[in-house]
Image 1 (cartoon, rainbow, N blue to C red):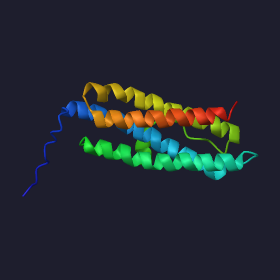
Image 2 (image 1 turned 90 degrees about the vertical axis):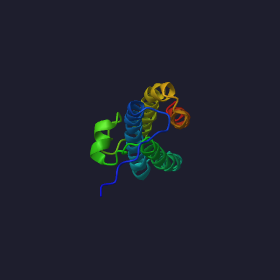
Image 3 (image 1 turned 60 degrees about the horizontal axis):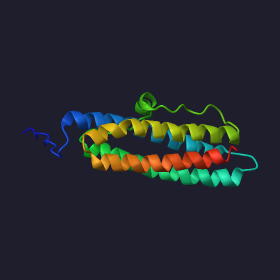
Image 4 (image 1 turned 30 degrees about the vertical axis):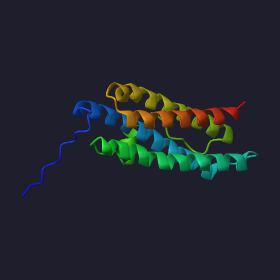
Length: 160
């Protein structure tokens, strides 16, 4: 006996949920890619700012690790599968991988760019959530925007 898939009726039409989930999938891919890059830099940073950067990168990758779960769970709540492989993330992300082991200053600059990339991706999804009256997604995106904008500012401050 086949079991039918339950209909999702949360007050957001399926087409809107699909568009929002697709946008959140891009946010998830950017977030996971930034997590991986930040963790890589945490392991490999050297130089006179080692301790400061090592600790800052750890705090940021830890926050990003928690964020990917929240984003993926929101996609699932909307009724769609969350992407979860490197190949899917590579197709969806706007953040390039780091090549080799850059200097500490280049690491910082790349992480600023990564933080700002997540902001742009999240900001592009916000109108979809807003138009569909999807307050939980809008709230999640607002939180992500605040965190990434603050992290970008803190990292930029190290470059001046």
